[in-house]
Length: 393
Image 1 (cartoon, rainbow, N blue to C red):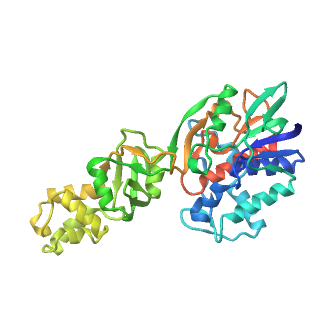
Image 2 (cartoon, rainbow, N blue to C red):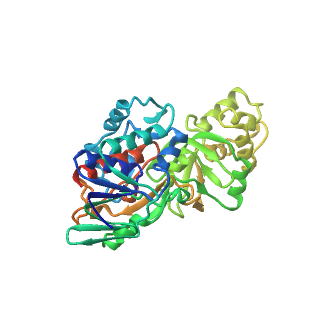
């Protein structure tokens, strides 16, 4: 059986839903297709179930792409404030947690319900649990084969996401479609992902599992000051997830375990004012005791501070304020929040998200080589890129 729509959208995640809403508002006949039984699962689990739906400080510097200017147009066409207005229209209560991150007060399901209701208002046809078998193009029509039906459309929007969290249905479908239409890809990698270690350092992580503290994590010119967590596999927490998007195998990362204290100056002062105090106890005043014991043991430093040379104190200070570690890998797509890389932005119009080679073919959201920092930026990219495709498709 053949069907005809103005716009077919593959993928009913954040970007696909937004595309469908905007295309439908223009009076376009829209079919939104998704292989999952439940719509918007990544929205539902995000932010601990409260959905970190955008960030007040959204700007192009918070994104990674081979073309650092590509996202400017979409972010300007549909801003964080535009999405906030939509949230307010539905009287969804929200709060700023920290660093501009906005979360629902109650549940991420409110965001999903809002988007589905907007789709309904825009008369979008939604097909769940529907697998796309093939996509082709003939003349000016895109032909989408879903087995029971062959669907013709003037415009086709690919919003199938990346490879992160495969247990939630992530696939390489979007990349395969891009290849089929002779579009270039930027190599994909897991991003916003815990880093793993081996041998001696892994034993240290296991010993300190569950311990968390604010740290500054640095790699080259990139630096993040947020929480860090020791796990039985290595290091996690927001600061580690952030730096993971920039990390490559062989890179060393720098960790400042006490960002608010110059440890060396602190110890020199203590040596003068409290010379009989135990060094481990002193260090435990500024970092967790378990970590203090572990570091002093690793450095083979103990006893009263008066007994320690300034050179030893400098060595100890460096191991806290300027600790160098070399990850051996990451936890991979299994736990990665997003995918780095994707459809090469040189293949797309930044103003419309349409392919430069194929009129009517659009790519939006995570499938594109635009990756946001942790903190609601990837959702904002989904809303912005989805909106732009929706008003043009």
